[in-house]
Image 1: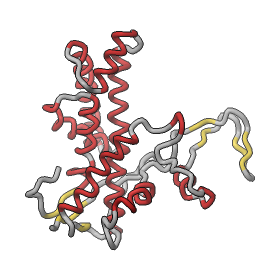
Image 2: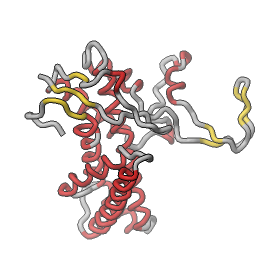
Image 3: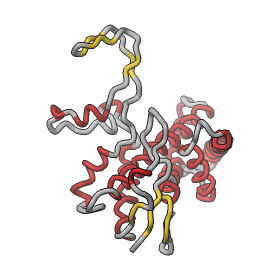
Image 4: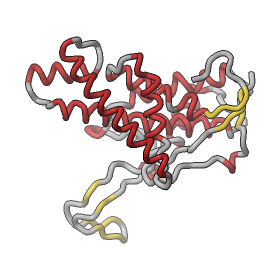
Length: 261
């Protein structure tokens, strides 16, 4: 992360966008503070995975193994020494009602870390990129926040659905059993939206459990960078920013900037 002495060219993804969400989610889950450095490394390996790189695949396997072992140890430790964190709450629910196995607790913790991390990392990265390529980077953040955040949404599609019967929408027929990818971008940019709340974090029973945490991460990182470094700028032309190859999440590979006060 950036300290007061940071200067020159840095990668915001590596220095802010990955470590901050990793630490926040790790703390919520109850991962011990002395594991945060390893947690950041594991998070980076997962978020930057490149399927074409054997070395990247090796790092990913190591990260997944470390996280599984760490969460297993945390789950076991919370039984005898619970704290004010999510895993402790899950352990209490298991002990009181016998409704979750240890494997289920570990899997739940892993899912929370992976899903929450990937989304928060790339949302922050996309917001930074959007602001750094605008004429007035931060401006009135409280006024611009909603519009910029929605436009930077790294998840263009909702979790896939399946047609339970033949459906006709306009001139198109969706056969029963076909996979349906719902476009969140399309819904939020629809001229007929007419004030309807964004679907970025879902809606109703599908509303994102981590939406409030993500909002806290965004508000803790985005304004702070521009307050601390009001003349920060991209270190490469906008056209040279590289985005990851992924159908699921639209996010940057790196975000090099030059820090300047």
